[in-house]
Image (cartoon, rainbow, N blue to C red; front, side, top):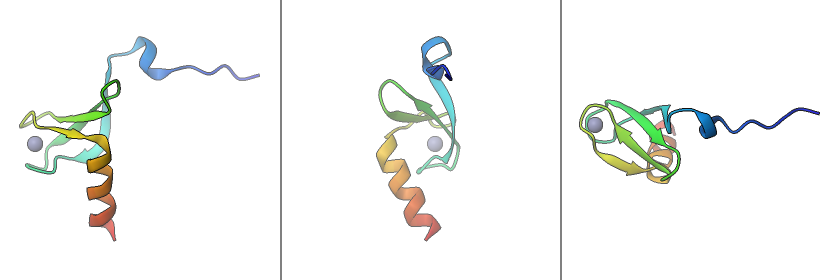
Length: 60
Ligand SMILES: [Zn+2]
């Protein structure tokens, strides 16, 4: 039986996300606990859901 490991349990709560900042195009980092993403360049914070919605809209 495979053990479930929560990757957020022991690591830094910031997880690199493969999304671009909606404002400046910088790299967004997911703050898993808050379900938010923070831009490493402009430090703007976005709700994760908003980022997903933007990316889906941009890809279609
Ligand atoms: Zn930014």
